[in-house]
Image (tube, rainbow, N blue to C red; front, side, top):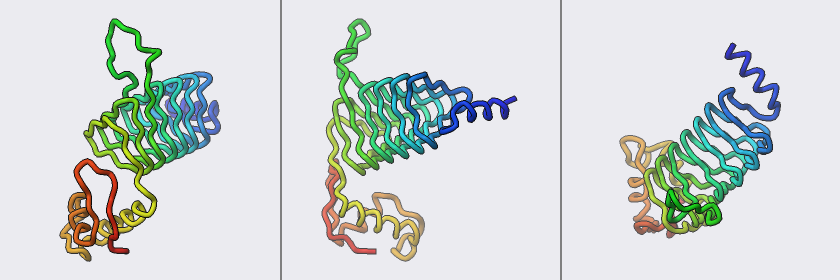
Length: 212
């Protein structure tokens, strides 16, 4: 019976996969190759790009826009005013808001504020993003963080060199003196002698760094 329901779901939505328990309202736009999992609700008017993954129990409000190849993990609610650009990763149970000072007895529907998450951003599990801010391209928001201000993008040249360095550490840790796969903090500490400086709360990086 379950197999039959899955096949029916695929037949009804030939361009994307939708679990039988998911609810996609008429008028929602879903891109080809996107997968929508258990108990997720995508409201009419929402736009979801190509090759995305919406995990279990995700809510997507009517004005939300999600770019291509984004991944939204379990138990995330994307409320009105949120925009995710291409290739954004949202960790499980991350929280977005759209009102600064909510009150149960006061309607704030005409006061929703926007939140824009730039291309390639990663937001860790259980992070909270307060509304009215933007997160620049390729920024990484750590698990459990509370974001209360704009976050600048990571410049392309710095991003490429960081990724190359990190890949080297992770692929061959012994070559760099690590007994096991290092933490991000350990990687950054190894970079400091080469000119990489990271200040607390600062998403920008200072190079040169060793090339890999």
